[in-house]
Image (cartoon, rainbow, N blue to C red):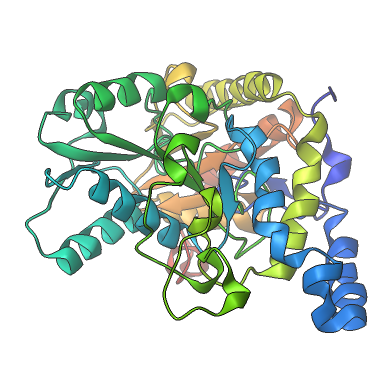
Length: 396
């Protein structure tokens, strides 16, 4: 296994300390050539033959198998395509069919909004009396009661980094007779996962964060193999049909995970993702997790020692958080903009959280200390108090 970090595998601008890999991973050096080949050699040279010659039609499963290894899933249990919102809808609609006699969807009030929005929309669409319950994250375990149809949680909280215990929550859900859905958006590529060992029915996630697939990279869905042939997808798209080129007028679901395909695969974007995933071939996920904890612990200790105005918003115990750390500060948005202007890129989450991601693939302890040097200076001289930093932009 390779030794971390592997900075030479990423095309990061000079002078940038990138603490935002939890929101958008940086560009792997080998991706531009792969994308150029997909555009010129495959699309340009092969034209429509690319679907067969270049294996475009198989990409959603073959490339997803590389993700399956990262999330601890068996081959042919995961498929790529569409967006995370679509994959949440697929998983949730299927789960509700599996527990048609129950009406409660249990999540938590820290879950990412798209998961909650998709649940709310599905409840309105079905219109048969379903209810969405969202207790505090720390109260979820005790809220898994016998009337719950589905437990749908994001393992790592997008704001604070708080991490649910996957094995314990899944076991509690199953003991109560509920179906389990995990959103791995802030987990895949950040923490070691054993989705198969957890016995969860479904998992979904995106690929543009820690997996470095690029903006707009497709999402993935995992379905427990023993269930895949027994689910009738609510989004019954053409490419989820058992024989799409038979052009039958009625839907007949494909075998296994293929039935969770919906629309035409984004070939060029998947080519970029496939190349980015090659980085993980020789990365030990346990070593990655250990390095991530070391970096985040260093960051917390340095910030608390030098910037006492900031308040830690993430769990202090590193075993209880993912690969990100958030600090609260009433002027957090402006401070983050000032940091970005000086080459330290994190992001901001309402109402007052400065969020920093720690990706040991391209970060080391010197980066962390230098980032805190700049943060300390910005806080001390109030350079953040400038209209160019206080004016809120569309994307925070």
